[in-house]
Structures are given as structure tokens and as C-alpha cells.
Length: 323
Image (cartoon, rainbow, N blue to C red; front, side, top):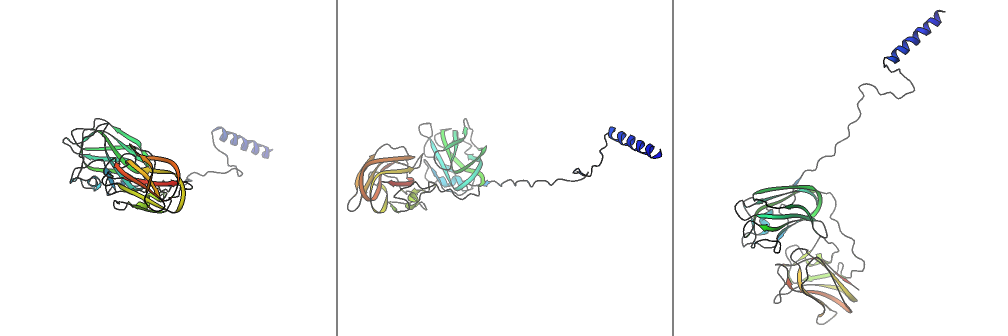
């Protein structure tokens, strides 16, 4: 009798506890104890942004004597690049920085003149290979310090493309690009099969600093040959490749700079021995990728003979020859 009363009392207390919301220990159920702390995930560190344009190679459309393009990336706010011409949609002024590597960038800072010579309408463009993409479009700018933020983008080249200035010219004291190294090696595109000029001996009429002729036949569209002079009728610029043996060829592909420093008028010439013979004559070319086909001919040497350039120099990223 007493045992029954005890059991009834225990059950009554149990039901009362459940009714009040108390949890009953279940030895077969996983238990989360009060005070137990879940491990906190390690946060991904925020990359440190630096000015990746500092002291990098830079080219421009025009410059006044004593105010070279390199002044825009020297880290000195008292030196300046000064254009030698006005800018409009038909005569843009361009500054282009080669970052010498692949970076993730998201900010550009420009220190213009604060008086009269500054860009009013312009674009900030980027690319790794191929064509430029516009990241920022600016209208009615007022000179001085201008900072532009945009979505992170991988870039090898950064360009300032000016289509309107406040006065006749533009003065730019500093052009800074902020980002961080992607940690990836410089991408080398797959070489097109059967490119007979790949890694063959190349020579050029002139060379600007480290931008040697062999860069035009290395299969890498991020390196380039850069001449040290413009091509004219009186002083043509040439780049020539020795294929190492005689081949029957009918196609030459040239990857010029897209916006400036490209060949406008030039000839494709070939020979095995003796004098070069012209296979294709080009006039009014517009830069970027150019493919030239001609009647098949036997040749060991192939030459681009440039008599007119878009600006003061020439830049060829790749020079390819095909059967």
C-alpha cells in the first residue's frame, strides 16, 4: 500500500515538473550543457591595400617637356604629368599604368591641378588581357583630390581616359591605384598551336628599356616589345623573327596596344635569303588584334615594317606566324 502511494506521489511530481517546462534528463539523448561554448571560426584577414601603381611603368598620349608621365606615379605630390594637348571625345588624353603583375584593385586616387588644367570628364578603365572595361565614369569633376571606389576587380593595367578638360591641357600630380597582390602567378595564356614564331629569335630596330623584342614571341599576352621611337617613312621601326627553318606561311597575327602606340601603316615582309619581299600592305590600322592573310609563300624570316604609328612609340604584345 505504502509502495503504491510512493509511486503515485513520484508520478505526480514528475507531471508537475513537466507541466512547468522542466526538462527531464534522458541518458540516451545528446546533452548540451549550460556554459558550453562553440568554437568561433577564424575570420579571414582583410588584405592590406597599398598603392600598387607606385613607380610602375606608365605611358601617356602626350606630355610637355619636363613633365613626363612617370611624375604621376612617383609618390611625389609636387611633381606632375602635364599633357601637351587638350582632350575631347575625338582627341582623348590617356594615361596607362602597367602594374607589372595581377592585382585585386578597388580604389583609384587622382590628384589634379586645382587651378585650370584638370580633367572634367573621364573614365577609369582596367584590364588583364583583351579590351579595357570601364569601372568608373566621371563627369563635371572639379580638380584637386578625387577618390574613386568601385567593386573589386582583377587588373594588370589601369587607364585614365580623359575626354574633356577644364582648359587647354591637364596637370596630374599623382595617380594612385589601391589593391593587393592576388597571390596568383602572372597568367600565361596557352600558346596557340602551330604558331611558328613562338620562342624563336626576334630582333627589333629599337627597344624601350626592358621591353625587348623577344617579349613579342614568348606566347604571353601580358608582355610586350616597346620601341624607343615612332615609325615613320624616314625612320621605319621593324620587328623581325627568324623561324629557324623555311616554312610555307600565309598568316600573321599581331596584338598591338589597343589605344595608343600601335602601327597604323605597315607591311608584312618575308624572305629566306636575300632581300625581303612584301606580302601584305596595311594602311589605317586601329590597334588591338590584327590578322593578316596572304598568298602562301616559303620563308624563314618574317618582318613587320612600320612607317606610321598612332603615337610616339609602338607596343606589340604578340607577333605570331602561321602556315
